[in-house]
Length: 217
Image (cartoon, rainbow, N blue to C red; front, side):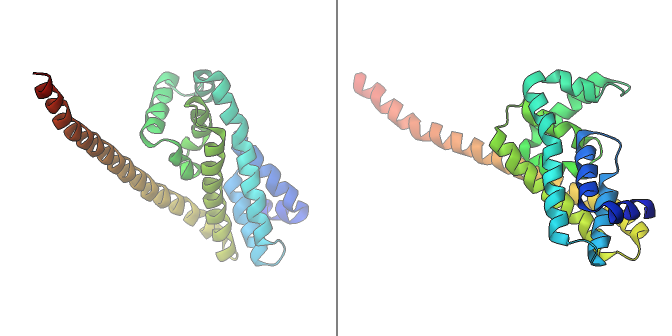
């Protein structure tokens, strides 16, 4: 962790931007640890917290964008490429599709806190033909939440980054669980409202149809 802090301290904002961009592209770079380090340096007055957050959000969105476009263009082949090293790539592809189908684009809000889900949600958004505007909007909110949580923990626990890293994992898990529960409740509620609306329409249309039948007789 100290090595990452020293790297960000020495090279500043470009290193943070490059690390988060590479992390979102899928390269083995510990993006959350760079955010923790940047938050700690912001607390020490070495970096500006607003600049850290803005750069982190932009880098994360730009890292997600190529995967979204790849999903729009190549569909299932992109998912299979991501899961190519898994024991059962087809099963992983199917599970990812089912998860995205259940929650839709709002799952981008918490995907970065769930290992594995982060990698597949941008291409799945492209495969599902989510509009570019909607993808960018939801992804920007998700990136803001992700950047704020990790940089904020680094800022608050700047004198004990090892503890911050432990809290980051727990906070991400709890936040993801709460958000998934919220999305599930929203999905169920929306389904019920849609179902009730259809029943109301059917009920209202029945008397009209019966009247016309009687008039014809």
